[in-house]
Length: 467
Image (cartoon, rainbow, N blue to C red):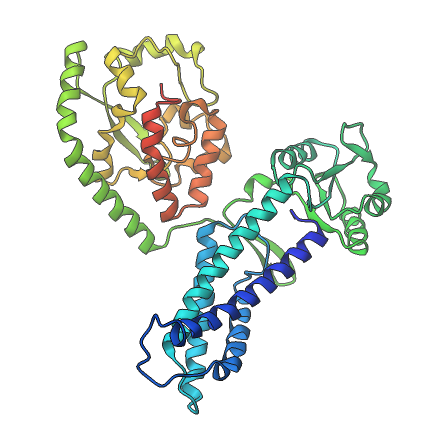
């Protein structure tokens, strides 16, 4: 819950009334464009606006029902612009089909189909802009601390502390935290859990978040009861919160309620499209950069002895091993010298990174700064061992040090670039890298791949976090 109950109710009403006016206005404007503006030739008899009054009212009803069906009257700050447009397209398309069916059934008057088409386009465009403007206004309002849902957190342990940290880190909710109900002393403490009823009334709380693992079912029922009486939203932070990723569904086994965890797997057509992009992109890439390969090969050979390419065994999808290809950026004895440098590791977790690694050649430093050493992995993409976008493939020794939740990182085909590469590269802590990779896996879409590919050149050219 982000908006307070009163603000959320007001915002929904404003959204509903705005859409109502815009949809009605869109079809009225469509009539004017068709019959009065002079922009379109009148190939048939002129139709007065009086004939369109009732059809416009019917159209408004159809569109409002379709928008409600797509839940477009809800204020959802997490809804991306692409998701908003998709919902609006579905609603407008469904409304258009119903409207056309009604005009087909009602034969007394032949209404202009061009007018209907123009009205649909205007309704879609104006409501789309209106929704985003209203959301931007509400976001700005929340950042100023106005209309924020007033929240309290119940709990004494680390789960409560991490919940509070997340609330304070979110610019939309950080001004809504009233305090914490706990037994032990805390900077946020405003009372004990037994004082819940008084706190709800005194502070006009909109949401109660229970973030405590050691609590009985009867105690939870009492909290829910008090919340319902005061019309406050009750939320429970489960102790297995790390598992709540991907698609979560409430299921049943007889009378027993269960939580179903489903992976976000690509549909077959999505896999084919992603593979098609990989083949097309890597093929074009090889053609474009093949002259560059020759110059890099000469530079590597002139500086130090050894092969031009460096191949290393990496872990791919579902733990399958493959040889990843790179331009050699280190001296040939780099692997042997690694053991003596492990105590100088500057990366957190199961990864070795060192800004001034003595094993890196002068040419190698330049190649690494702009990620040019990674270009031969296009060959891995062509062969299907890698993708253009995906998590970076780990070494086997790194995988052995992974925590259980980090193993999801190897559930998909690794990539040349990924979400963490365009979000800070090696400057990010290892755990944050893994979280970004897992976020990518759980929220994969073609559009996400495209956005990462578009951001990659800038990340590479700045050279930030590359070493």
